[in-house]
Length: 309
Image 1 (tube, rainbow, N blue to C red):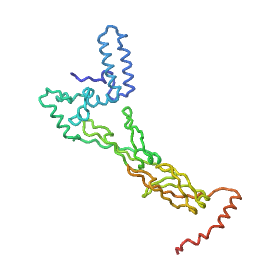
Image 2 (image 1 turned 120 degrees about the horizontal axis):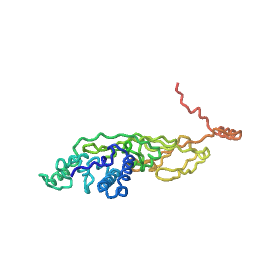
Image 3 (image 1 turned 120 degrees about the vertical axis):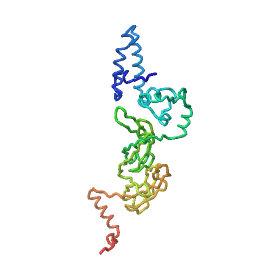
Image 4 (image 1 turned 180 degrees about the vertical axis):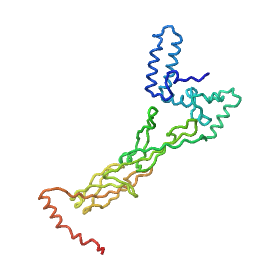
């Protein structure tokens, strides 16, 4: 049976967009509709062909199979991965040209089932491997810290496709994710290319990473630092209460065991809390008197500096 050209049936090129395909179909369907051509068998037959062509080209999955394998790719039970490993064929109907049927129907002078068995045994295709597709994905700090699903678009219109990417919790700036088989397929078969994403993670005013894990800057009032306090803090592992020791100073560190970030499936690390004692930058005379009284209570601090000369 001759290979049908669904693009020619609609009068569009193979690079036509989805809107162009729809527009061509609507015009032809209107002109060829049996109600406008009563008793015209040829018009009715053409109307059916146009409807069948549009049914394939308007469906992204069917269109992709047809573009790569021709009508054979639309048959029930067709295995595209196996077809690519065995040899691949484009819409010209190459499989039928060489007398091969992926469904195992014989009559070609050799054992088709044996060909399939050998193809499966070979495992991954040995054809030329497509070059990896590389892209960058921008995340804000909290998105990268929490992980989850992120949606992005791959390719250019009209063949753009949406892809959902799962971001592991605690991903760091510059790390890469490899998405197997998501970078496109070589025209004549062979292994599917991978999509390699480089993660770009934005900065956060209060959170950052060091070699020992996640760090947090915690604002503390002077009286809280002097008397000690209990402060509620949100961590990647839930809300906790941080105990501020009496007489704490700015820059002092507290380590919260197991309350930091996970990283690529590991157990949560520690969260290192940096106390940041806040000092007022504006105020009235009364505030100044209070600060003078505070200053009088402090020991001589300049004398603690080492002599460097």
